[in-house]
Image 1 (tube, one colour):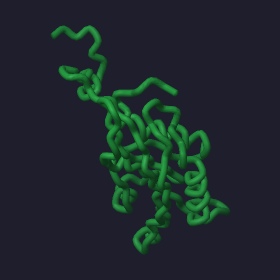
Image 2: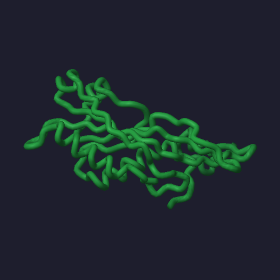
Image 3: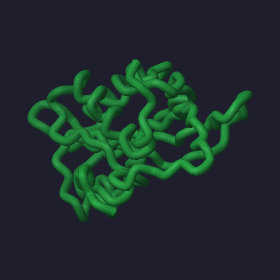
Image 4: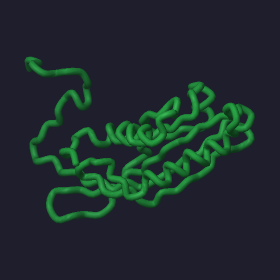
Length: 173
């Protein structure tokens, strides 16, 4: 397990994508992002497929623990995009990729401190007439990821590089 991360919400989609790429190394695109993904986005981006885009869709309270910690549930999603390839139909490829995700995700903590086992893994196929017109198949695998966040001690100031970016070492204030 790694030490708790103060950038966990931002980093988790990329960390999950890295794990997925380890199981599916021939994906043309496998990366983290924030928010949803739909057919309009697919048309706009011209995403190389097969692809898996991992996203954090939201955060909701989970329960309370004794002490200063807050337990929340992250609504996570892995959007899967496939197209017909030589000798493999897009719907078959989509099913094979989502089956792999359904095997990888449950109970996975991604090797991170403060991250509980993934639960409530579900697949939903998003194929419709419009998707068929762009010769793509689209599905989403969703899950709940329990996370424990340490409360910030009173007077704590968040490191500026977490919201301003860049290397602020040695900055004079």
